[in-house]
Length: 85
Image 1 (cartoon, one colour):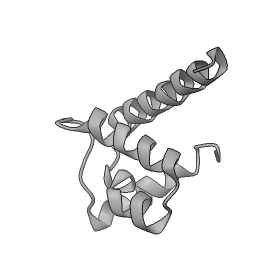
Image 2 (image 1 turned 60 degrees about the horizontal axis):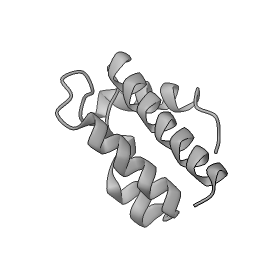
Image 3 (image 1 turned 90 degrees about the vertical axis):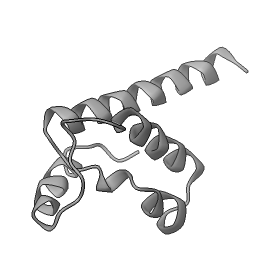
Image 4 (image 1 turned 135 degrees about the vertical axis):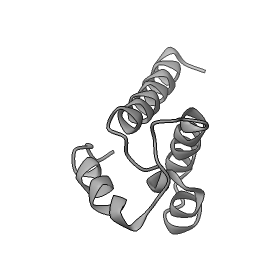
């Protein structure tokens, strides 16, 4: 594995960690990281891996919340702040 590939993998992991931390700090929902959205609806290998990493990081979090109808608007406002990858 090249140095560039290792650096890209570290950067992707750092991005997943930042996303999980942001989800907790803003007390957001975990629904956007559920497997169906990434493994079925938009099956891209990197996206599947990233969502799985974020779910693992958020597992047992007392700050991130499960999906509820009232939390959808909150999730959309957070999603709008993320850059497209």
